[in-house]
Each structure stands twice: as structure tokens, then as C-alpha cells.
Image (cartoon, rainbow, N blue to C red; front, side, top):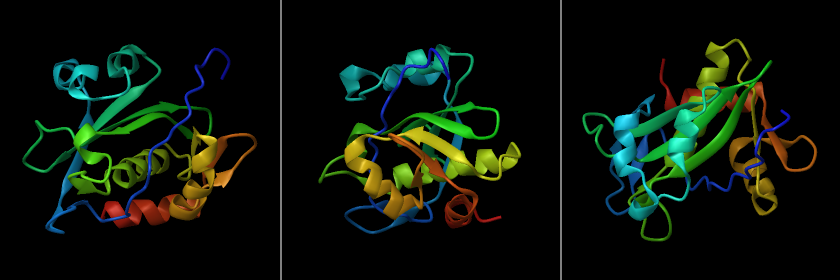
Length: 175
């Protein structure tokens, strides 16, 4: 992984739902994950409150970027994830919930969990037995251990193993 910029992920798993859940009404909404495209970039800017440079992620041939949307409402992006395929696992480069899904007044719970579950699903599809790796902010390491079943793999590197990955996939993706 030489030459890779070290980005520490700091997403919070607010709630593991089986979709995303409106924080006011408690209503659940089915979601879908699809490829993030150049056309989507116009709504995902720093001016609109997004923190990361998603154009840079999209332009990197080694990365695949996916968007989470509500079924039948694909114009409003709930969150984004950037993934890359390694030799024996999927690496989560970036994960960000939409600005309106952050903080105490956020609109939906479950966005980050949904995106992590999707990364796990891709890992199984690629033959990596659900293994996911990412670099966590130090302050969130315990949070990821408790909420995702991840474990520390030296320094700030976190691994989501097969059994924890399977639980997430089964929660979010009924097969």
C-alpha cells in the first residue's frame, strides 16, 4: 500500500437498521446502492456541506465509489463510500454521510452502517470472505469494535472479519 494517502475514517455507526430510518417519524425506507458517477458530482460539493473531495476518489482508477439512495428517489444521495480491491480484502478508503445525515438534527439513521454492509457484501462477492480493512481515527477504534465487530490489526488499521461481515450483510441485504 505504498503511496496511498493515509485517511483516517471517522464515520459513526448511529444505529444498525435494515434500511435507513427517519429520525423524527421512525419510518424505515428501503435503500439501494449504485455507482457514483460524474453526473452526481454537482450535488456533492464542499459548498453543499460535503467534507471530502469525491471527484478525486472518482478519478482514481483503483477506487470504486458508490452512493446510497432511497429506492425511487435516486437523486438525493444519503451517503458515499469509496472502496478498493486489495489482494485478499476490500479496503474502505472513505465513507461519508450526507451533510443532512450528520449531527443531532440529522434526517436519517443507519446510513454509515448501510454503506459498511455494502462493502462487506462486495467482499463476499469478490471471494474475500467478507474481509474489510480501513484506517480508523484513534478515538473511534472502540466504537468500531462494539458496533461493527471489527478488531484492531496494528496501529489504527481495523479489520471486519467474516462472521461480523456476514451479520451486517444479512441485516441490510435480505437474500
